[in-house]
Image 1 (cartoon, helix red, strand yellow):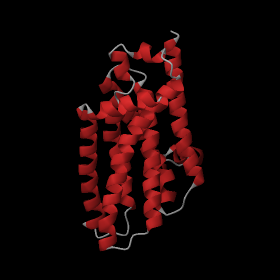
Image 2 (cartoon, helix red, strand yellow):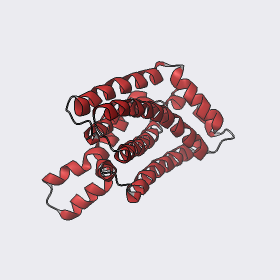
Image 3 (cartoon, one colour):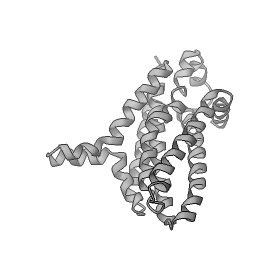
Length: 236
């Protein structure tokens, strides 16, 4: 598992993907930060900034996940790793952790850098800021798990990327449909699957254990489904 994790981490930075992801994320997140906090005069209210980061994930997180599984099929190396000494769960987890490490490294670095001007121009709450950062990390982890699953379904990286985007959108905007729906049961279901609805508690500085369980469960479900896809293909 560790060997696969190291290989995936190395592949991100021996190819342009890792650099493109970090550069795009830092550039766009800096623009969001300037637009929604400093220039807006809301240096103590940064909840909108982190919500925009969640939306940004639609476009950039598939960069990290689109090749994780699909590339193995394209290069005809999938059977080698499927029959190797590492378990399928270990294989999937190693690839997931590699993508998450690149994402988390860029996000945590930007969050640390952006906190400095917040303290200079306002009076931000460290608790709320930490909760927002933690919630976005959890949301990113869930989206990456979805991307790993989609990548296992195809050998085409572009299909993998667009499929991941299509899967992220409903989870991100499900609760936005509530204002157009009168059925209470449907509204409850949409709020239940919405990642942004779970984010609001953290944005208020409340550590929501139910939301934490939701994010972790979402990761677990999609990683489990990925293992099942690989297991079925191994014995096909």
